Image 1: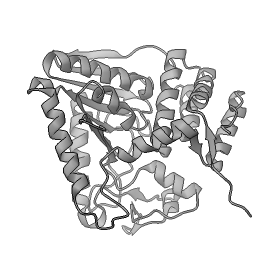
Image 2: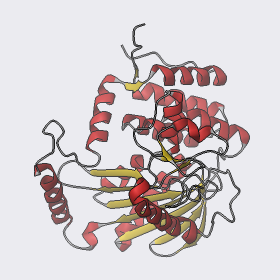
Image 3: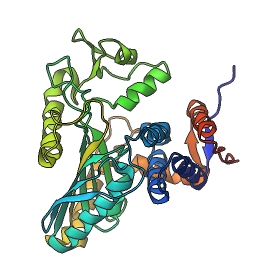
Length: 356
């Protein structure tokens, strides 16, 4: 049997199709447009588990009321350079870009700006929001935690307490920006589900079974009792990831005053911490960029272990992937395209024509 080729589709057409589906599910046009834009942005950068793979989930959230289709966030508290928002179950794909823009505006005035958003529905890949600040010559940090979700074990445990807690930073240089996005768990739940769907093992022992064993068997995530995600660092160094998970939840859940003991278990609403820093508050912004460039140049100049795999700067691969896909079309596996076809039938929104 010949191997099926991946599908290529123009970014504009698949983005408009996704927006149509989300509007059909009840989202207001401006909300649906932001949701579609940031899901496709994740696919363009290669974050496949956070792109249109999650479209059906977002549609279901709109339909069952766990994601609000319209409206606005509330500002709970506010100072010159700090704000706390309540998204009240609006999509994080819609609210987080607004929070980043607000943090940028505060940073221009005060040198720094911090916004914490609680109860934001699906946020997707933090990396897609970084360039909003970087393009303005600013540094940005984001962290996210989900108070209703417990899937990551503290180091030394076989039951879960934390959520996977992604963390991302962005910084300008004199050339390509630095864009860094990781999880404080060994892997993301989406990657485990992807491995299950593809009937593949995980590339490293990222799960802890109910008996306390580390495993690459993704299907244990479906067992009863289910395996849980290991913290970053795994069996030997997981105390590092465990501490980072605690750090991120102090900065998100504790500061927002909405913790695990208060949130409804199983609710996927997120708390997002966003901080932007304007380098010009400390000195000449061009000198900052020169210093940042010297750092990445030094990384690139080191001797690689394998000359076929030179050291890469965070974000380098994602930007190259986006450039390629903007030219040749966004690439989807046949399996994911079949999933999107089911969404198309469900929402009565035919998929767009494929890129030739």
